Image (cartoon, rainbow, N blue to C red):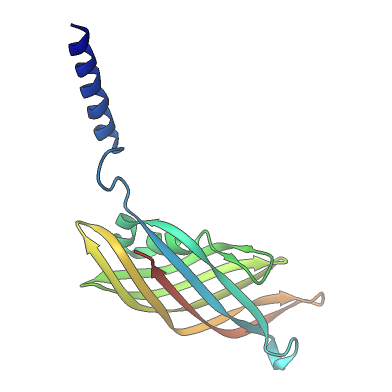
Length: 176
């Protein structure tokens, strides 16, 4: 009798684990992506540091494959929101705008990533071109680069804010 009770208990535990997704083959398929967004902001008239003011926004992020497969602004937020500017005191990303379009194994669209450093808003934006692998409604791999990339923002040196320009490059690549 006790043996049957243990078997029944084991069956209930397995059913409970499967029901909560803990034993499924891919409970929330995460895609590990490496984000690299580098460049330099420049001040008007060529004033300021030679070569501009560098930025390096990036990191490694685990993104839900179902979110990537759907695309849109939510996918871009999932990719870029937790990144930091490693050249400027790890200033965190504060906004992500744009649209990631997913169709026929390709990704296109545009993105603008904004962060603040010392109270000054900075951004980098560009068009997106790349590839994605989707299986069963879940992305398993993604890779894209920025095209027509620009950088900008404003900086207040104490006498008012000056608009910044700049240039950069960005890429996103999964490790799967």
